[in-house]
Image 1 (cartoon, rainbow, N blue to C red):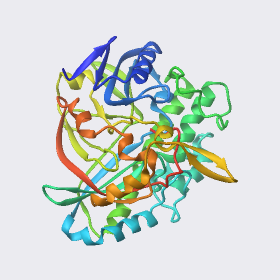
Image 2: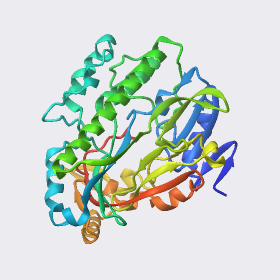
Image 3: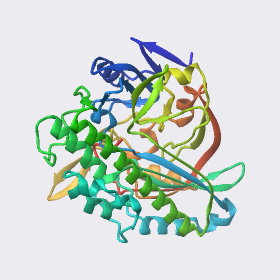
Length: 406
């Protein structure tokens, strides 16, 4: 059976207890039409990651969308083949690491001029005006956590692909945290960013003034995220000295107006990818695993998932379990605990011909499920078109991560 129904919730893959408990809570909160869990599901903030919650058309959940609004994946196929760059791969990865900004709060050393920065909402909305400077500085930067810039090879054709994963950076986080603050009676810029992981979803009426503001600001954050991914991919193509002849660009952590059984609804996908029949999506695995290009297929499973699929492989270890905690020892910050031996990980990746820049134990391959079994749980609603193997991975340094990432 491709999925099981637990208390009315379609669950793909092996049920994870904490995520399922969150999904049940989501189903009880607000005017909910349906809930589903994708096969990469795990516990998130308020709504499980890999979770899809469908509301009646007058409601949306900012906590369900999450703090990294419109986080997404873009992949492009280049005109290069692996033999053409194999000998130069270390130098190319050095350039990617040096010329693209990775890490929390990082600024682009060469600010980007892009039409999204001229959107009138930056000027018209009082809460967005202070965020414009941050948007200008951060457009084209990657951020931390599991956000990356990767090079892949498609073994059958030997073609080189570029893939990136990140979202709306500081502006998206400020919009999400600011709206949640307002919903709880705090100033927009209050330092407290939300409640706690197990809080019920925060529900906004889209007919209200705040609901209308959030909807418009969420879409602006989405445009900002797409502009950033486009820019970074273009930078990597420049470094490689090539062009793209195919691109796939998709996002999660968002709310969409769609129709379910002929009824207009709001579909909130946190860490879940839209998967309409014929739609292409790029889904990434861990730094040592495959990534894939998918195409949606119409089926009973697709309808049960509200036309959604996974956005990755899904975590099985928390950051603390994997990498330990920062402690003060002798006036220095040191890592204490953690079960991942990152030196061993680096040796294994090098042995496999994967050039790693940055990254840390909290993003090691063992932290994640393997992607193929996760995809098998959705086999009735997806078609795998391209299988991509990593040859170069660039991520933020190990001590930089965003606790509210997707």
